[in-house]
Image (spheres, rainbow, N blue to C red):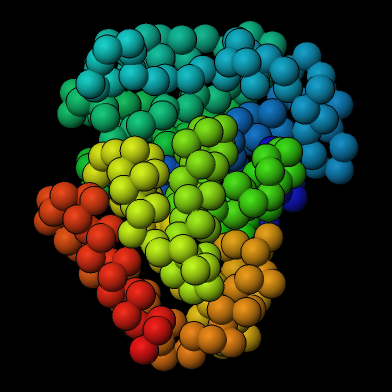
Length: 333
């Protein structure tokens, strides 16, 4: 990640950090808070690379020098990461004690040192209290970055001594664009981004063969519902029951179907850029001619009702059966 990319996804946080770096006015402690997958860890790494890069260009780290590569691999002696230890549920006091001892020494290769605490909300109270004194009386050239998804679980005294930078959820468009840039198939990138706004989870979805199969089945279903002479119910018994074989997978399938009718609605209201099934645009346009805006909304409501039934632990196949019958009645009415 570079500063331009961070600015596109997290404009305010990028502006604050980059401005502070350029002016040499970095705060001694920052709290990067926000949902999973919003780039907090990448921003922390980018800041460290910017500070320690051997060949910066216009304020951008080169990402290729020895220091940039060592920061990225977690092996730079002046950039220390604190994480949950293996099989541990909390970050303990002795981990913070080791950190403080390490920072009592001057930077190994420069006058600056940085520590980054991931999942900071998982520190024990004792660990937080140990860290508090360190943050209150930082050593010269020391910078602290605390990363958390649940800021409210941290002590108020910790929060008050940090500059808080909030990372907002990424848009579907931003996640999809990044996936495509990373060579994920565009049709899977769009559906993965719609299913989760967490980039790493979206990558995992794109690589999961089941997602491609599920998407293909949903497309077969809407084809049978709207145009095909073949009935839709046999598809449920022959393939859906095998593919959507648990509650989680059924929920994903319902979400995929919801996106289809939302795409039809997007075309009705003049928002083609919001379409998830962009490779099916001709079919969507054809169905939009046959299904009015109000009935598109009704179809979405039927899918949402099915989702509620699933959440109430109704059998997945029964949920699909009732939904398909109700959608068929709506479409042919």
